[in-house]
Every structure is written in structure tokens, then in C-alpha cells.
Amino acid sequence: MKKPKKAVLATFGTLGDIYPFIAIALALQARGFAPVIAAPAMHQRAIEAEGVAFAHLHPHERDIVEALSVDIPGAYKIMLKNPHFILDEIYMRFLSKTYEDVLDASADAQIIITHSLLVGAHQAAESLALPCARVALAPLHLQSAAAPSLTPSAPYILHPKSRAAVQYNRIVRAAVRLSVNVRMGRLHAFRRKIGLPPTREDFFLDFGRENKAQAVFGLFSPHFAPVQPDHPKNISASGFPFYKPADAERRELSPDLQSFLSAGEPPIIFTLGSFAPEVSGEFYDQSIRAARALRRRAVLLVGAKDAARFASLVGPYEYVCEQAPHGLLFPKGLCIVHHGGVGTTAEALRAGKPQIVVPFFGDQPDHGARVERLGLGLALKLSVYEEHRAIAALQKLFAGDYAEKAKSFAKLIAVEKGVETIVDWAERIS
Image (cartoon, rainbow, N blue to C red; front, side, top):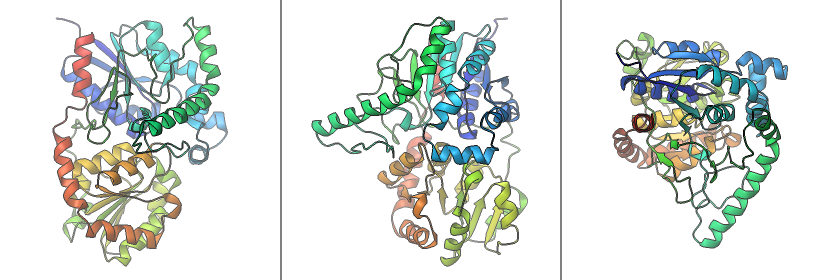
């Protein structure tokens, strides 16, 4: 019997960075590959629960906590204030450990698929001379002068109408590249240490002309973020990475939540995904006040801290819980108010529900801008998110044609190939 081809998938981050790679792994498995996901230890259970092999990848949560002498909520707060935190304190600080972990995981592998920002994994793939694909989970990771992503720290002209405007965006992008590359000294020194040649590759903005991957995949809908003429030539936008979990037949909403949903009109769903509950601030307090003022039912998906706090505060028209599968809950909602993480945004799009995006950091402002531009919802800055502005935004959402447009958009993305495009490439290249 022919031995299955081993594929190593390397990723790092929150569940929004893990679930897409589980989706890729399951699709590879269905085509006869033997996938292994290299990821931080905190995600081992989620990966192995899907029947996918797991390999340890640094940094773990405890590595970050020990390095910074803060707890996890403290690390999140630093991340929100420092735009270079992930580059400096995660990708660069743990570069050699990430590299070594991916090397270990890739013994006897035929192919490597990496998170587009995980530079330690990129170096391992290059050292091993294995076919490698990089996966960009958000449009922000593939910048363009012709159609730039909303990047709060970079003054792009978001809708350039002339050659001069596009040229201006190229200059802005070059300046941002320079500021990032100044911080890449540890990478260049590490490459020399492991015997790799000098590189001018742009790892963090659009891979540049020198990207060494055989393929780059934008794992989002081309209707949400089309490929641009100045993107890398080896890129394709394949669709969002939806998948059917191994326990899908047994998954269901809790009996209490099902009872709440069936007891009245569809509720507004408020959620901050798996990351932002650690730094939720006043988001849920302002949200519940807005829902009450509008006499609307509400479901609040919260972190453990807020769950305990709200337990005695909710009334008969509100339901608070720490977890509920978005794929089951969102279709039952009236609209989704969330932080703009790419996974949460995608699930709201798939459910065909209008959205209000309240971004915290990173790629989230761009997702909110795209949702608003497509007429699928609204974006509201976190700094101004309070009861009266939330009420006004919800009223505008209910009065407009956002719900109809969201339903139409859901039909568009339902037929996209998503992760199957990556598996097609894997079969061709290996």
C-alpha cells in the first residue's frame, strides 16, 4: 500500500489562525495526504479533536508570559498599544525555536504550508528545499498600491482614481516596508547563521517580488478582497476556509440557548471572538444598554471574566454564554456586532447576516471597511463605541437594505472552493 504524502502545516495565533489550518488539513486528509499541524500547545486539543496529527511549535503562551513578565491579558494589552509587538516579541524573539520546531515536524515531509507571517517556518521550508505555500488569512497581509487595505498607521489613499494616487500609495508602502525591514536585523543574522543567502524578501506586507514560496493563497473570498495587478504573480484568492468539524453531527447549541432563541424574535449577537474578550473594556456593557434601549433581544458571547460579571445582570431578553459555535448561532441572529476578526467576519458573511464591526487592532479595521464598502454592514471605531452611537448604528442597519445584501453575498461565497484550491496545488506540486 502506498504511503500517504506527509504535509506539514505551520501556524500561530488565536483560534482564528488555527481553524483555517484545520480546514486545510482535513481537506488534505480527504485526498490521501497525512497532514501534521505544528502549532502552540494551547491548540493541541482542538487540532487532535479533529483527527489531525499535532506537533509542538514555539512560542507557547507560557513562553510569552515568561519572556515579558506579564500574564496573558497583560500581553494582549501590550499588543493593542504596540503595533510592532507581534513582529518583535513573537516572530523575531522566538525565530530560532519556531525554525527548529518546523524542521523537527517536517522529517519525511513532502510539502510545507505556512501561515504567511510565520517567518521561522519560511526559513525552515527554504532550508529543507521543500515545496512551500504561504497562506494569508486576511487581505491586509497582501498590500496593494492599486487597492490598499485600511491600515491605520499608513496614510494610503484607499480608493486611488489616478496614476498619481497609485504612485503615492507605492511611496507610502515603500516607507512602511523600510520601517519594518529596519526591525529585521535578527532575521538576517539568523539566515547567515543557518547558511541561507541574503534576501530582500518582504515577509510582512505583500511578499515582494522575491517571495520564495511556490504559491501564495489568500484564504478569503475574491468578492471580499479581489486579487490586484500588483499582488505577487503566484497568488490566488480561493475563498474562506469553512469546514465541517469531525463532531458536526453531534454539535448543537446548549438546551438553554436553544430555548432562549426559540422564545422570541431573532436576537442581536454580540461577540469578540477568542481574543478580544481578554480586553473587552466597556464593549459588552454598552452593547447590552443599546439592545435594551431598542427593545431588542440579545445574545452576548463573552469571556470567563465577563460571564461571571454579567450572570446577575442579565434580564429575560438577554442570554450570556462563553461559547457557542458561530456556524450554528449566527444564522439564528438578527445581526452580528463583533470585533472584526477575519474568522468571525467570514462566519457572519456565510450566515447572510448584516454586521457592525467594532475593530480593536491589526487587520480588523480593514475588515470593517470592506464590510461597509460592500453594503453588508457598518464599521464603528472602538474609541467611540458607546450606547448612543451603538443605538444609532443598529437603527441604520435595521432601516437599510443591509440584510438583503448580506443574504445575496452569502450565496456568492457558498460556491467558492476555499481550501480545496490549496489541496489541488498540493497534489500538483508533490
